[in-house]
Figure 1 (cartoon, rainbow, N blue to C red):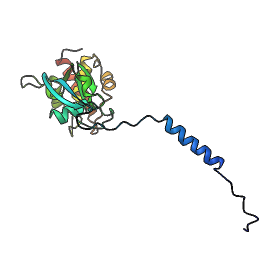
Figure 2: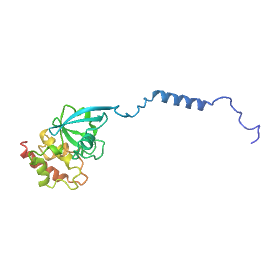
Figure 3: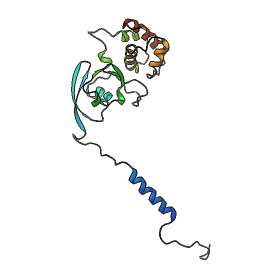
Figure 4: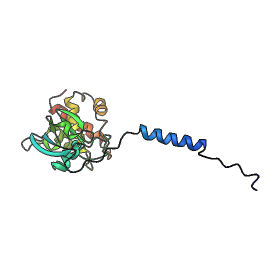
Length: 199
């Protein structure tokens, strides 16, 4: 290509360059500001949590989940970190009698409320009927999901959602068992349902 056939050189930016620059500028204006990670005591708060009838006074990063507070600050490791996205149910605990996914619950939101974990179910050295039923029916294999299964099962009965096997399956569907012990879990809940005085 000789000099006579080359396209003429443009002075200044091209149309494409201008549109690209405008797009970048608009994106920068629309993007939310990025917060710096807290350092030192900034972003921390004193929290008092009532867990299994005992008060725990802690200073936590305000972003700490209830699961991490239980496991890392109270040495209550029964609630398991499975998916950490609220999809497997291994972290299930009770807060004021209702089952919650502790991996999706901020610890500070549980202040002033009663938290019960798998460690708090047994009373005076005697297993809760649901714990005993899981043993009786071999409702576990590897045992990793078992604490969450038991906590959900207790709530399932207390909520009145254990009248039939189909109800049990429906209301326990948020708790996954990778070992597939589901028929034994249903049988355990059936047994404990009668012992817990529920229909």
